[in-house]
Length: 255
Image (cartoon, rainbow, N blue to C red; front, side, top):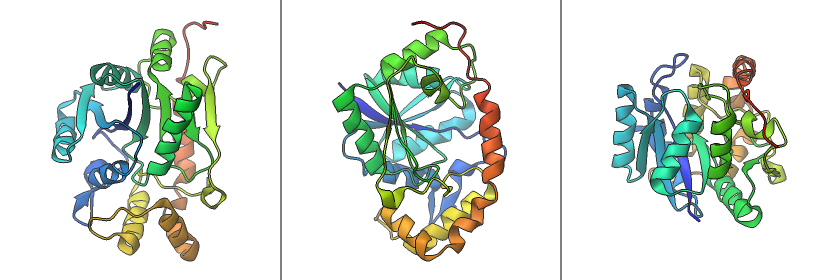
């Protein structure tokens, strides 16, 4: 049984163009995220999964420069992209990390894989963490089942295919109480989000060191002005997600 982190990323943003190539402290946010993902101990490998669009070649180059694998697949169907990447690299279970989630927690990733090894669940996340901190663990066979049943080629928002029915074994892990902060926003969609990340890096970053989620939460607790930087865009983000969720439809339901 082989596991992996799939870094799901494309260079197609419209609200914040070229956001995954923005630089903080001399490195792109993508490179900072790769550094963070390398701290996870349980995955067998990291695969940057992107599309065949010419604009995304730069992301494949970043993967090579940072000594991780890469895969190019469907431009719009993320699940198809993950499925074919898993087939290419022989992956049975993957933790999907969105390229927007610069502070995704490697300990959360390890807990997801540990839970999969113990339960053989189809879909696993860590609940009630700040937005952008958890990866989404999903089994290859579960993705295959969704691909056979879904009625939409654009799977930008795909978690509902696994959680919005009784077809899959879903586990939501409880976080440590100190990290139970679902009101906090740590994902990159708007310029305000980028300013939030810059503010955290300005205070915590040291070359060659990856600061922890505990350090981030401690910083925010001591500096409540920092999360206010991007709190105002949360409602816009949630409305966008709700619109995307409406596309989650099955053409047929199997028992």
